[in-house]
Length: 111
Image 1: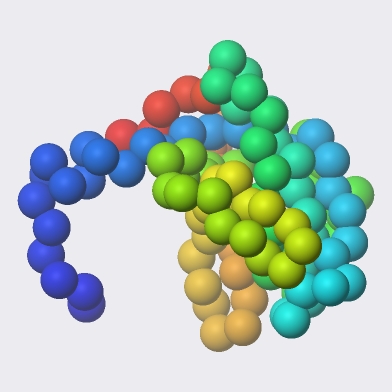
Image 2 (image 1 turned 180 degrees about the vertical axis):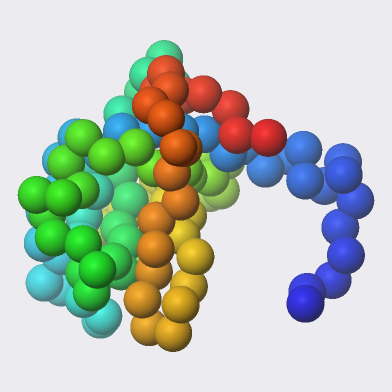
């Protein structure tokens, strides 16, 4: 387990729900990954890369809701700029995406 944080630390993390609206291969990535375009409603469209090719094909990801961290700084991954961090549970080499049980409004806060 990592270091303990305070509740105030946790409240600084901006967790939101978004819907994947575009999925593309990312052949330049070191590890197999997709380039994702995600709609966060009033917060806009953001891009991210995700190493989720083991369990998900592009068609299954379209219109799928996910949970992401929006207030990390942008990160350059090769020639691609990632604007948010899509969250998933790591199970060995597989990543299982986190998502709400029911559809919610894009941009909804996760708390």
